[in-house]
Length: 271
Image (cartoon, rainbow, N blue to C red; front, side, top):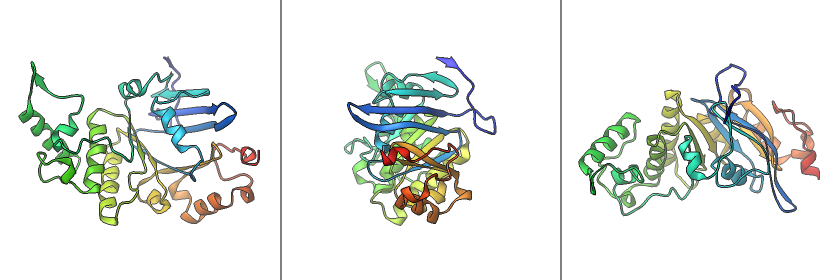
């Protein structure tokens, strides 16, 4: 890996930066040169209609697929992800909608999946319980008991455990794939509060994929719009509005050149 010291305008190194990421499947082009970056302590909202390329981009950023072309930098170092395991080793974790929790195991075991504490062949269950309790308390997740099976938790609590497990794995970049989908206001509030607390820690970068644009303004520092396999819009949330986002999504051809810091045209959408 080569250290290129890529940084944003305030010179703080990016936790993750994608430059010119393209992906084709035969004659089908899913991504057309995506530029994206996120810093430690920053929450980036990623929005776009179905078919815009969000799933493909996430799979590339997490090592599941390889890009056809383009570069990926992790903390300023160019790297080519070899696998999901390799991405995790470099601090990139993803929480998908299915959560990948084991319902029949208690909370403390789910937090320690694939990193169980042992003495010889025996699990150090008391130590895992103690560490799980302390960790959940530290990041403000209200779970009455770490001994309860995950199947007994609410949707918001389950999602919080999945996010907490990613951070507990020493992740430096977390990708959240629509964590608030199908959640009520109260359960969604649990996740929004957790994202806010993680942002305040300033050591984790978060990419939040979301369909509810109002939620973008609850916790995100910046928002990117993915259209036709390109990032066509990049602004701080303080400098835009729900109305502007809706206008860009529903009227892509009328805008010609959306207010993107990358200044990319929508010619790919017309092709």
